Image 1 (cartoon, chains in turn purple, red):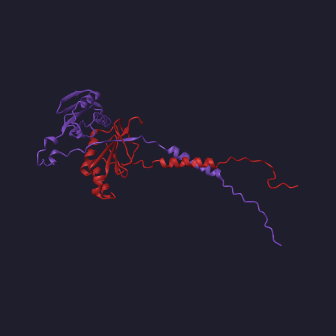
Image 2 (cartoon, chains in turn red, blue):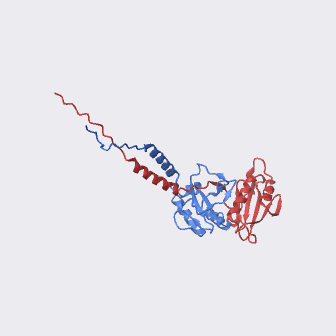
Image 3 (cartoon, chains in turn cyan, blue):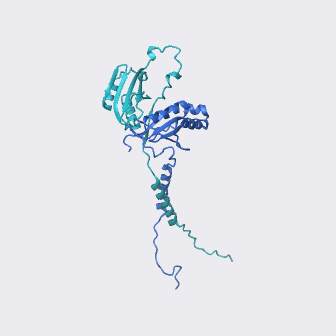
Length: 162
Length: 151
């Protein structure tokens, strides 16, 4: 006589989810409290400064006229607190020494002739006072970019300036 | 007459917490992925100046080294004490180049040194840092600024 298997009721396994949820909320609170959004950064390219003239050997051949660059120097004078005091622009088109505002400098820089298709034929050097704030320097570099000059050189001002 | 199990006869209603747990774990994963624990390289002590014409960063920019310059002109590095002189900066950069996985020569050619300077740092400090980078042998340099409209 076959024995009938007793129909045992299925065993329900209940996973305790409530403590797991508690732990998850703890982790979430930790990450929310320690989260600090970083401001988006941008990049500004500059040319590495040239070495001192005494370190460079003289060129073996003279540079042909078509390869010569038009060199302009933007002089940035600062006050003792590092703020902009005065600006100047020197180059083949002339010397302007009493530029009082960034807008004026921008309009003068936009007048600089750029040979068509040869934007790299114009070299811009920013000659800045030692005490100038980095924020003001970035404003001047920004301005050079707005005027169409992507890459600039940096130089400290010779003694007697700023 | 017998009652099966649970002699009291109370009814309990438990909400289904599985879906809520799923959602909370999704949020935890999101925050884990975006949390940046590497704060030494992108030091929050440095307040960058704002530049309207700065180019946004691209995913191609991967081979770089950070130098954070604070408002006193000290160069903060990810490992070690702040550097105060040009010789210390040069030494640090040359060591980093020697330790580069592809060798010193490749490091000088391919690694971009990024200067993150505080907006109140003086030009003299920035320029001496740039000269130290130049004389240590690196060829690529970049300045960082905060994109306008982000602060």
